[in-house]
Length: 107
Image 1 (tube, rainbow, N blue to C red):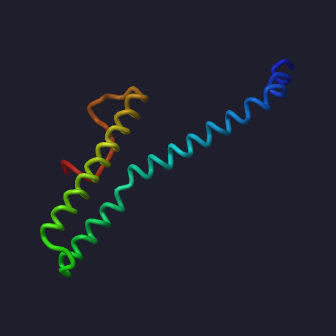
Image 2 (cartoon, rainbow, N blue to C red):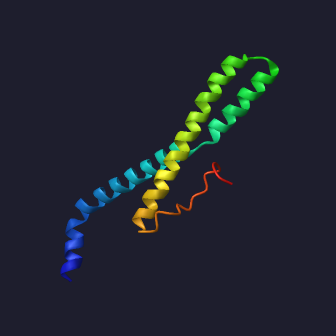
Image 3 (cartoon, one colour):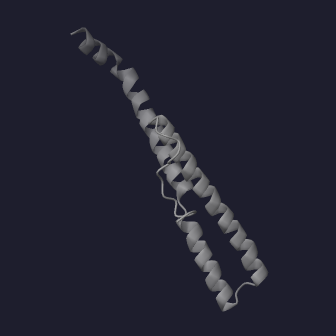
């Protein structure tokens, strides 16, 4: 009975805090999805290749832009690997196998 009364009396304090925590988790999830999304960079690479074939950009411009795209893809892969390591550490798993497929590296 005492817990029920406590819950009722503390509801005006607990509910806004819980709602705020939920909003922060949603924002973090959206930010992680955006930071880990490599699809726009892959599309940019295809776009650059088409522009080079058509003659809209020079070889030098293509090489410069391609370098930026590959750097962004490497950063995304590194973020994915870091998140996988953190997840494995939270689950107290062996550090040897991360268990994430990034699409790069050894095949």
